[in-house]
Image 1 (cartoon, one colour):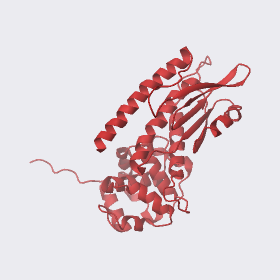
Image 2 (cartoon, one colour; image 1 turned 90 degrees about the vertical axis):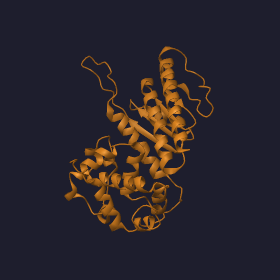
Image 3 (tube, rainbow, N blue to C red; image 1 turned 90 degrees about the horizontal axis):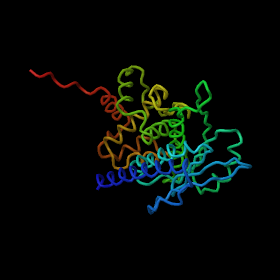
Image 4 (cartoon, rainbow, N blue to C red; image 1 turned 180 degrees about the vertical axis):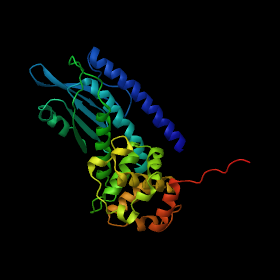
Length: 298
């Protein structure tokens, strides 16, 4: 069943990619399409006048809204958010809330787009200031990697913070936000993250300390592990380890129960494939960072 769902998800993403490519081409060569004709997807692009000959564009589907005066930015950010819904669903067993992103190129853009973004019925709204890189002659260059990384992380963080399956009163601690954000974005990869930790075993924080360590929003991943800080890397590695061992919705359980004020020890006490106390969990996790080398063949 999981394999079939994964296949369906990949096919959907490929269809989405082809469709958005067509949409982006249509934006520069003719009137925007009214609908894709795909039930449940049906993205549309509309132009919204700002004043005089000025306008911005909005791409909108059931789950994702992106607005910018530069139409060349719409397709890439739209696909980015659409693709990020798959890992979120893997860990939380539901799709993330409807999300709107406003890309601000000129200072007046936020005021111009504000009513459209706020009236989009999106539960998550993210604003991103964009500096278009230019060559020596002033011609715009392809947007830098930082834009994709920044938008991806802001949206994933907002999704994690907004997850309210338990409706608990407690704010999520930084280590949970940092770790789960990495799982949703897929950055950095588990391999690169664990390789860095394995090279710094003597510097790792004990889990009791990690759970009390502040991890700023700016430190949550920008695409490479060096940007996160050691605490953020540890958090991502630990939660990914718990997921790989336990599965069974452990990430959703962690978020729900910690938000209700329960400690990590209460979460793992009922696990099937994880140690049932924090000290044993830490020992198992650290051991996974440096697996034994295979014996040499005689």
